[in-house]
Each structure stands twice: as structure tokens, then as C-alpha cells.
Length: 292
Image (cartoon, rainbow, N blue to C red):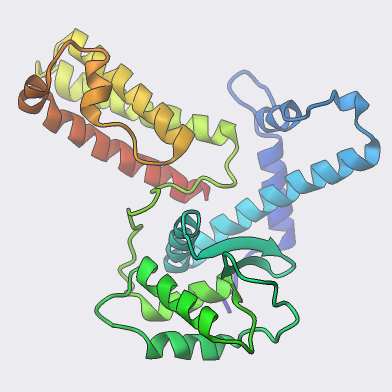
């Protein structure tokens, strides 16, 4: 098992630091975001209910902090974990649920089989290895194997804790793990709107600086073009942070603010837009690796 050099006191300290984090206006942004989600006024909520809500808020923060420590201690496992969560959001056969065991992968349309013995992890790993085509170890292929094993077995539960599945995948997949792109690139579960807005603002600033110093000051774009680029990327970041899915084409974003046709875009602007988008995506990934 993975061990973290991390005490309960460390976790409490980090959570308190997050809760009482202030913005440039000296406001407790996380607490304000927490209170703003209530449908009723704070004074109208019963003490017991408020305690349970606040407890859930603290648990969420603690889970996020532990996830960050896990990512630092086991970066390969953390990447596999994110790939699996991203895949399961759109899987037609398998789903991710939470119960007393934590996050669990199970059949999407299967009947309850909690009365059965849990699937031995060693046996599940052996079954997956026996069916494996070693030339193909990507996530969708391995999850199809897992689904077929669940469907065929009748004596064990058709579910497995996510953390156990991650360890099986670590043994199967190459250590050159990448985030796969057949499904959403970003997994922002656990981040508050404040976190997302802060990441977006940081990336927007990087792109603005790149546009001004690399393109405007060197005469590659005029002021009108730079302003159009900034607005186009602002729209793209808004869509990205709202949907966490593939955005509109870059041409569609730019033509909203610059009177150009597709031919003009291909000749003069496409390479610049794609280069800046690549930088932006990498910056988003860097920030999310720190946050998640």
C-alpha cells in the first residue's frame, strides 16, 4: 500500500488554510462561496442541519487535499485515476458510484449483487491479464475487458473499488501514461467556482502576455488583431471552464471579433491560434495537476 508522510494535523492545517483563504479584497472567498449555495438564509437553517452541511464541506476539502498528496506520492496512479474517472463519465457499460467502500466501479445496468462475495482483486487481475492483447492497453480496451469479466462471472460482485482498479491498471499499462483524449481532457470535480475562475484568470494572463510581447511588440499582429485574439480566447476559456469538453473551432471564436473568412484565417491566423491554444491547454493542465 502507498504510504504518505502526512499526519492528521497536517491535513487539518491545510483545510483550515483553505477555508480561511482571502482574496485581494480581503474576503473569505471559500466561506462566501459555501454560504451562497444555500437556498435559505443562514439564520433560518437549523443548527443540526447546518452542522451536517458544514461537515460535508470539510470532508470535501479533506478529500481534495488527500487527492493532491496522492498525486505527489504516486503521479502514475493519479494519472490513471483521472483517466478512469474521465472515461466512466461517458461509459455506456460501467459507472462510478460512492458507497461505504469509497469510489466503486460497477455495471451500469446490473442488478444489485451486494449479497455475493466481493471479487478477489488477485483473481480479477489474473482474469484481465489472461484476456489482454499486450499491443493494446488503453483505457477503453481495458474497461471493455473488465465489463466482459463482470458479465460472465456469477459468483462474485460485479464491482471493484476504484483504488484497487488503479493498481491493476498500473501493472498492465505502460509507465508512459498520458491523459487520453477520446473523452473530456479536464476533470475538475472537487474544485470550487473560485478555484476554476482563478485558474482561468491565470491562464488568460499568460495568453495576453504572449500576445503582447510575442506578436504585438514584434509587429506580427496589430492592436485590433491582438484585442480580437484576447476576446476569442476569453470565449474559449469560458466554454472550457463551463463544459470541460471540446470547444468550438478556433476560427469560429476569432471571426466573432475579426471580420475574416476561412481563407484569411488559414493563411494568417490559424498557426498563431493553434500555438496559443496549445500553450493554454498545457497551462490548464499544470494548474489542475496542482489543484487536484
